[in-house]
Length: 159
Image (cartoon, rainbow, N blue to C red; front, side, top):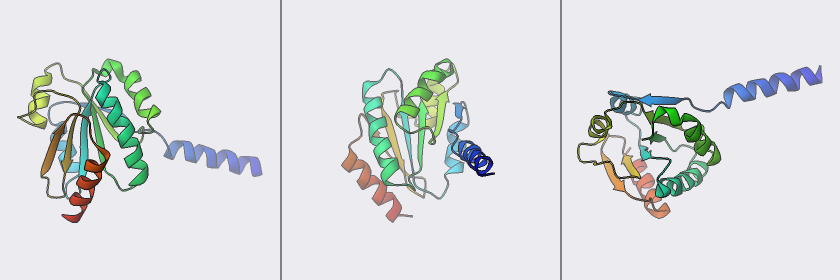
């Protein structure tokens, strides 16, 4: 009986602890993300497997997610869907597998970039700090822990 209970609990834990599915980022995905997070501050980070500074950001985000359990973080990989295994491996390595994650899934990446931000030219990493009203602050380049903490507290004050 005791083994059955332990087995059942472990199955339930595994099901609830499943990693987020890597969603395809296509036309309309940015609007879907905005709608899903409407009225809540969140961070949108664009990254790539071959971007060293992006990987540095993953380490920062890992620390922030542990510190701020309420942190709403959305990660968008600008890599191809065929690189899903490598993307998932990075997310798992930095304990970000439970974070909402997307991957570019359109051959016309310029259109996706324009949909995210008409002024963005594709430089990575690119991070957007959205407040509850939907206004954002964009940062190109590596994020700084102090800056992120400031953005998080400022966004939550404007709720």
